[in-house]
Image (cartoon, rainbow, N blue to C red; front, side, top):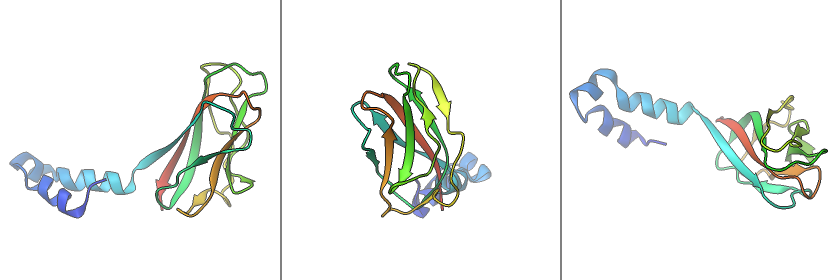
Length: 135
C-alpha cells in the first residue's frame, strides 16, 4: 500500500505520471482494492487453522484449491465458533471451488477477531484464499 507521500512522489516523478496522476491511481487502488488472506491447509486443520487479520475488512468470497483427494473434504471459514462460509468442497485433488454462501452478519472482521479455516477431516488438504475488502 502506498502512503500519501509516495503517492505525491509518483505523481511528480515525470511528465507522464503527472498527466495521468499515476500515484493517485495507485494510491486509490491500494486503499480500496481487494486483498487475499491466505491459509495453507498442509496438515490437520480439523480443529481450525488461524488466519491473521491485518486490518478491518469484509469477506467477499472464498476460493478453495484442493491439494489432495478426500471424498468428504471441505473447508469452512469461521469467526470464533460461527461459520462465515458454507462448507466449501475440498474433495477432488486440484479442483477449485468458490464459496456458495457468506453470512453477512459474520463477514465483517476486526483485527482482534479470531478467524480460522476448519477442515472437515484431519487429512483434508488445500489452499484457501479469503478475498476481502477494507472497511
